[in-house]
Length: 324
Ligand code: AMP
Image 1 (cartoon, rainbow, N blue to C red):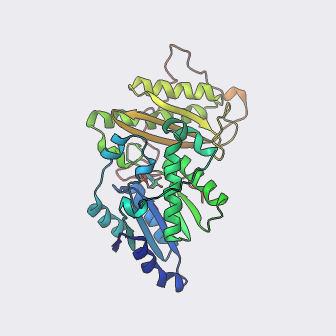
Image 2: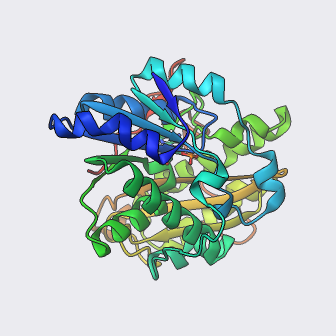
Image 3: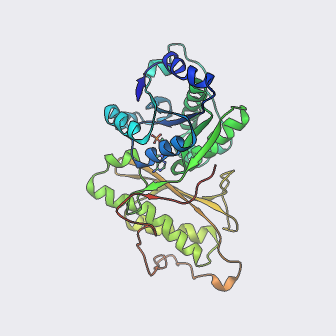
């Protein structure tokens, strides 16, 4: 696997493949690769003739300078992992290569960018994501680009961007990969201290307890979310948001009467984490409804709570939900 630093070198490396009619897959990352990233690379490897992994810690999408400075960087290790997972090229440009002097253009997706992460982090976050993803797509001109469902809103925003700008690329969303105990894999997990690592699991437990509660028939979003809040605060985690939204528009839902995206963001210590699950309503009949917790009650206990993910094992967990 070759590492390339400039757009010119990337285009030169891909030109013969393109002329030969080979398909190209792009996996955009900010590095500090883990099994989640590797699952995207493996998917691209299965579907494309050439796999390009980009590694660029994009300053434009960080709303906090300290977050950007703390972000883990380990290029040599990443290069080894990407090659083992099947990448052909690692594109690791400098900040100056991506944003040369005089750079003055940005790409903004309205609506879906303004909710959840957009509301919590400000408009500049998705403006930064959309601008860099548009640039990476224009630099690489892939047939398909691979993103993780872990960043569910990012997938929605990128799909909108690709449709609105008529970009000739297929967007593939790949399932969230989790640690054996359920914590969603994230480059930021490396920043957690031991005690924080335990606390971080509360995000997953909260999502799962809401899922269990919904599986028992509760459909009122307010009740479901209240149960999740209790799980989080019991562990000393105060979410920036915990929301049940329509998966395509990201509009808030009052009722779980259709498939819904359940999304959470919280700071654990100085580390900001996000996670999500897709929920489906289970039953129409009111007799399935479980009593919701009252203000001073804790959320209903579930026989198996806190359970590991149903597929939990010593190996990372891949969720089954994945949309093309
Ligand atoms: P990042 O390096 O955090 O920008 O992530 C690069 C890509 O990997 C994004 O499309 C993420 O959604 C995806 N990704 C990050 N963590 C996971 C995970 N645990 N499972 C699946 N995909 C992930």
